[in-house]
Structure formats: structure tokens, C-alpha cells
Length: 303
Image (cartoon, rainbow, N blue to C red):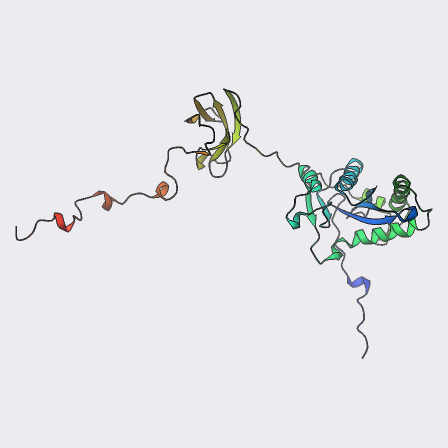
């Protein structure tokens, strides 16, 4: 029985982002120094152009190394829209329920940090092929004795890879730098707005600005103050002294004055009903006590 034939390379569809800086791929690979000592090379590539954005040699796969290579890349090429990496602790451990420093750093810049699906190593196949190309080149160089020596070699490789070597995955086998130059990089993302966190009212008097939540609440002095859903997502101004907290809208309209809460108070209502009673209108039947008098109050036919 003949063995099944493999699919030809032409049968596989390559997905490529439409412009530089749409997506960067980050990965780390181990390499050896003299004496059998090991180190890690972080490599960052642009998905659209295959440009080697930045590389960084480190003693191990650490958060500091990951941050260093991303900072190098941003300084050289700008801020990408997305950053793809694996689920490693130094890269993006979000799928494990852990928030990593690298994710926090790029998210603050507006970058969407994403990971490959578990069990789908082909998601980062471009990184793996890039590693192999680097290894073949390094094997022809003298074995580095220090991290700095290896960094010098890797930087030289990145320059050759970007500007002197046609890439088989690019149209016409142009170089990655030519592919980068052919299309304008996408506009950088907008940094996420800083969260509007309530600050404790440590002074005896003062003012502050708050954004009302979707539930109609603001945070003041570590206390949730109910303003009302009618003001959701609007900006309000808060004035306080030792006795009271006063809230006005952006036009100066008075929204409420509340007694200054004792320390430890978690919630101050606005005096309006909550939950079912907020929307329930008593039936006229229930207000008319003579409509259905109790049998005990009805006159007896015998009396």
C-alpha cells in the first residue's frame, strides 16, 4: 500500500498582516557559549516584512530580557499594534491566570498582547524558521565566550538578514528591509487611558474629579457614593470638607450633598429606592382599603 504523499509547500496558505507594525512576534531560543555555558537569545520580528526588529542576548529567559528586546524594537521601529508570543512566564503567562510585567508594559502603550493557542506550535512558525536561519549563520562564526560577544554577532546577523539576504517568503525574494520600505507602517496604537481610581480624601477640604460608573456610582474617600444611573459615564466634580461631600456636574448643576462618612463606610445611597422598589409602582387596588374589606369587618346580614 503506497504511503500518503505530503502536501506540497504551495498548498499551505501563509497569513501575512497588511503593513509593518501590525504584529510583532517575540520568542526566545537557547544557545551555547564556550565551555558549554548556555544563554538565551530573544528575537523580535515583524510579521508583514519579516524584518528582524531587535535581538537581545541574556543569561536566561527572564522578564528583564523580554522587556529589553521589546524596548530596543520600539526605539528602532516604533510601537506595534499587536505582540504575539508564547505562554512563557517571562513573555505572556496570561493563559495561566498570571499577569506578566511585559504584558503590563506593552498594554500601557496600547499594544494588544496575544499568545499562540496551546498545542498549536505553527502559530509562531516564522519565529522557529528565523531561529534556524540564525543558528546556521552562527555555526559559521567563532564560538562566543561572553554575552557581549554573542550580542555583537547577533546584531551583525540581523543587519545581514534585513538588508543583504533575499527572503524566500517575500514577493520577488526581496529583502525584509525592502518589504518594510514598500508599505508605510500602520499608525501606532493609542495608549489606554489611565483608570480613574478614587483617591482617599486625606485633607480636611478640597476638590476632585470623578467619572460616574455605569451603575451610577463614584468613589470618594474609599466609599462608593450613589449618584444615579442617569449620570452614568459623565464627569462630575466633588467638593468636600469635614462635614459634607457635594457633587456637581460639568455645568455646575448640584447633584447631591452627602454627610462626610465615618471612616470605614463602604456605601452611601442617594436616598432613592433600590432594586425592585425602584421600579415598582403600588397598585391602586392596594391603596383602596375599602375595595375588598376583610370578612371580619363586613356587617353581618343577621345584625
